[in-house]
Length: 169
Image 1 (tube, rainbow, N blue to C red):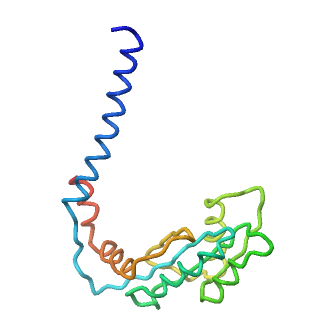
Image 2: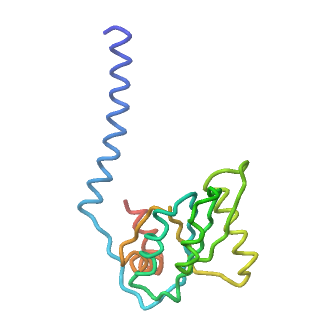
Image 3: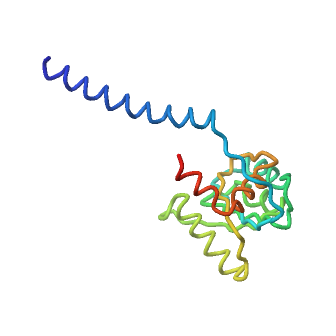
């Protein structure tokens, strides 16, 4: 075997192991499903959405959140319209649909991390007593199944079953 054949063989083995690792998780996901027990506990959740020029999709996400099979009094939606162009209507649409909206213009600190940090600081500043049990972070182009929050609430209130599930895989 020459040097190129050895390098090729080593790379093939490495790539094969990486693919096999992913296939293993697909197989586990197909045949082993964890169902969480129903719960009477309705936890409260804050929804964080960072969007830049998302006027075409932000309404669909907010609409899917408002159609959840879950107590709407337990869900509060916060949007940061991040570095949107002057003519973009992301903030206006989100406000009209009942979200709490903060607008941010910062051309130096660009990106979702900065936007979410800004949003959380504005929430702490304007809603100092707001303390939900959990947070959801969505991209503006997401759409939720009507039972998303209900199912996530089951997992959240499972009493540690999820962590036991992860350690048993």
